[in-house]
Length: 254
Image (cartoon, rainbow, N blue to C red; front, side, top):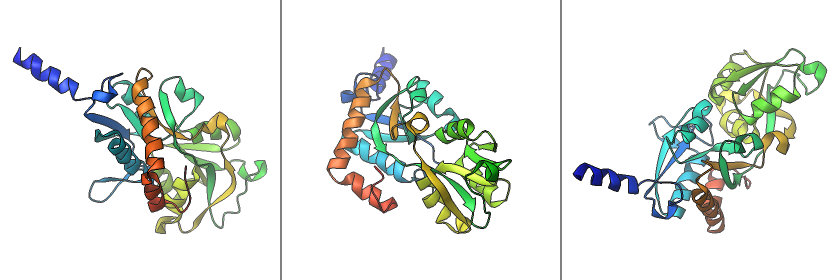
């Protein structure tokens, strides 16, 4: 009987669907490999825009925030397996993903672009791209877009964006396609990226890129979804969002 009571108390302290008002802890899945949104510093601490937004949302909801790192490939399956309660990992709100999970309102929205070496001479034309290798993070909206819209390129898929940057600097791919802000702040503005540049148009077609990045939850957790949306509005209204935004970007990423 004692063991049962201990288990019951422990269960009451964690999130369960439909009882967000009673929760003491919110477990949030993050990637930790997508600077400047999510990465790990030399001391092993999670840092980045997504990380600070996650903590700010937990503060707004008055819950304990526990961040759980997860590789991108398994980030939705781990949510469905209840490894955590929500995902804050720059996940775009797309129709395909909404078949598996539900989303809060967006918390930011940025377009995709290509990255090239400055002296490459590559342009976004069928002739220039013919046979070129393009790196992309596997399982992302950028992967889906590239596969559908650029059938004449050789697509190289990576588990993390950092792996794609390494192959780019090693000369193993000609171009990268990813979020423009992630590449600009996470690569181009670093020493490793000084010889590279974003070029060509910005891509944001809702068919591929959705309606901005939102917080993913399990479909049954509608109460949590609504509270997360309210928390996003709350930190937008009280200035906390702007403070975090201005730490990383010189424009409103929302």
